[in-house]
Amino acid sequence: MKTTMQRREWLLGTGALGLWGLGGCASTAGGMVPARTRVLVVGGGYGGATAAKYVRLFSDQKIEVVLVEPNEAFVSCPISNLVIGGHKTITDVTTRYDSLANNHGVRIVKDMVASIDVAKKVAVLASGPTIAYDKLILSPGIDLMFDGVQGLRAAQAEGRILQAWKAGAETVALRRQLEAMPDGGTYAITIPEAPYRCPPGPYERACQVASYFKVAKPRGKVLILDANPDVTSKGPLFKKVWAEQYAGMVEYRGQHKAVAVDARTNSVKFEVQDDVKADVLNVLPPMRAGAIAVQTGLANANARWCNVNYLNFESTAAKDIHVLGDSIQIAPGMPKSGHMANSHAKVAAAAIVAELAGWEINAAPMLTNTCYSFVDGKNVIHVASVHEYVAAEKTFKTVAGSGGVSAAPTELEGNYAWNWARTIWADALA
Ligand SMILES: Cc1cc2nc3c(=O)[nH]c(=O)nc-3n(C[C@H](O)[C@H](O)[C@H](O)COP(=O)(O)OP(=O)(O)OC[C@H]3O[C@@H](n4cnc5c(N)ncnc54)[C@H](O)[C@@H]3O)c2cc1C
Image 1 (cartoon, rainbow, N blue to C red):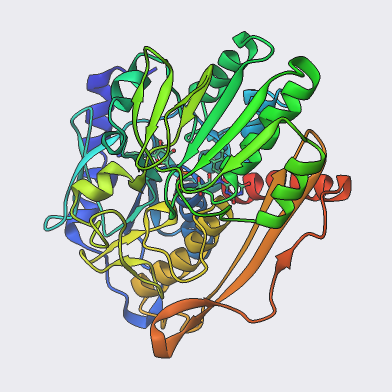
Image 2 (cartoon, rainbow, N blue to C red):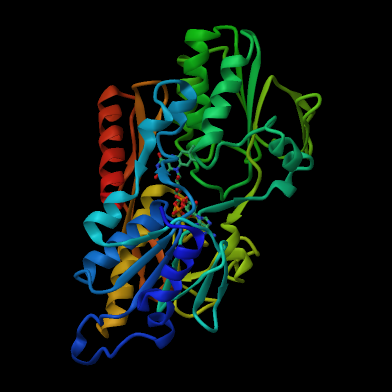
């Protein structure tokens, strides 16, 4: 185990981290991937972990990749709703970062990036040391805008009203709240206006809670209080499941924009509708790009999301910083999903390696997406799409006729969903 001082010396002392980036990348004459070039990746989630691995793969391990991530291990949001439903444990959705280091030579630094000096191309870690870069990949996920719902920040800090919208300890804590709830009690989830992380996620969660109640608390009630006028993803499928599989248990109410909570009375206030009281409140506030992106001045779309050049995911606000995943301003029809973040990462990694090597970048990238939702412990519905870059409009558009949605929940799709999860975890981390 390195002491803090030893670690600081390692970070500053190796030619690796102290000097290479500041020196800029080596010559790209002859179109070779330049050695002694560093790509710094901030955030080891769906976007960042995938990008770190693929920069190494696409550069034949020549480009140095440093990944800064504060968490010991990757905890997947996809499938985490099953932990809340009691069908899986948090260990089932957790993967260590070791293989990224051992199999691909990614240097992993367990820390937070506290600030980025865009002009000097240097990131400052929360623990003090700096890391220089030639290219920076930022995939910090989302920042929950607690101040968008009065009283929520304090209620969250006290552990009374949780979100569990970043999988981990809160996922387990929300499950415990449900276990402690009396039979006949109410669980209520509030959903912010789109765009937010994972459009079908809140509806899947409602199904998971209902599947638990059906077995353990049959008189329990699930209330879905949505700021949007209607279900934002797989609407007809979810509504059918609520009406048939969870009849009398799940109730959906649109046009319910939460504006305040009162943790003493466990109630939520809405912009227009009457207050709602529940035994377990799961209030999702509005969301924006991860804090480090906002703080670096990259959130130039409505002061919430980061505009990027969709050909290489470079920020339109800062050269050589590429933003991926949930933090970006989405193109039409593009969800904020783990699958999409993984897709962004591959396009960006290929473009970054090409730019550093002096090659032309792919002028026609494609992205894919599939979001599976478990409506109970086994049965699943999906929505899928393919997105192509449209040069004339400088954006991605859904390919006509691609993708689609399930006809109905099935166990076969449950198998597909599990295989999707195992495959994407291996793709990003193994
Ligand atoms: C309940 C739920 C269910 C979901 N289900 C699905 C699904 O079925 N399919 C699907 O495709 N998507 C799903 N999603 C969405 C998916 O989780 C996100 O879209 C995806 O995680 C986005 O990837 P990302 O890289 O942008 O962010 P993340 O995966 O959240 O990664 C961000 C990482 O950055 C790190 N970080 C943040 N700031 C810093 C910093 N300053 N320094 C260093 N590190 C930092 C964080 O610790 C984190 O590890 C679901 C989400 C939820 C909440």
